[in-house]
Image 1: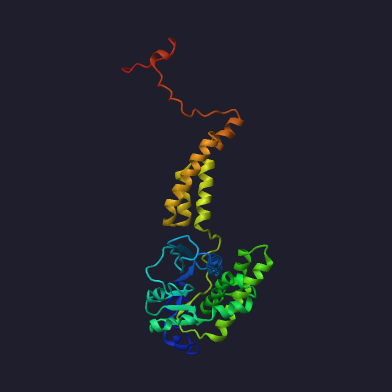
Image 2: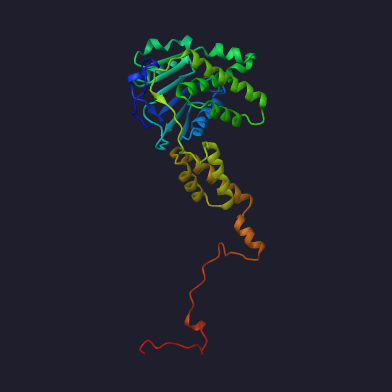
Length: 320
């Protein structure tokens, strides 16, 4: 169903007469550095990708120091756009320090999901608010207090999955890939996802127009983060000794303008280090094994002169 189709029925609160917005919106998750939010954000991103919807993610943090605020934006675009949008429609406010500013930055008609104790509804009457008792849900699924800070973020993955109608089986696959070969960790985190999903299903009445529906636009594609892309480019630049080619290839593959500077730094560093430790490039080394030596650094051959030809060499008369 394309964007702009009308929702059917009145059973979901005030949504009845509002236009459905399908596979074309942005999510911002406001959390704290060191809270384990990256795993939850990755699962959410991969779940949307698993629904066949083109999606991109971007981290924004003013500092890498633990305890300081960080924001992660996810853009789902049925048309395949990857750049961040000016406005973000859905907010997940997990950081009490920035929650007020975050909800005030939402456009009218946006959605806010937050810890119910924050009472953000008082700041905006034109935003759909979903208060959620994250602490209570987390405590019920995670008996160890030390782990609750990490597991808490997975609850909002379940909340969003139910509100946006993401297939829970797709989310389960994303959690399993995130915590491969760690069955206990998977059980704990997916338990938090399922708890959030069940809570939203039982307690929250959908009032927003945002939906995710299956597409087939990600078939044959992979999702890769910026660190992996830079690492891939650096390996290519160091082995092949073609840093500019590596930058262009990775940029063309990802379409991420924000990767250009990190790619340049990583690729040129890899190129310089590889050239220092191993002066002979890999392709030249393979040719040397076959007895072929390329004339690197040698002056070009001089053009032939008349004296280089023998006396018996035939010549042509220009007047003939």
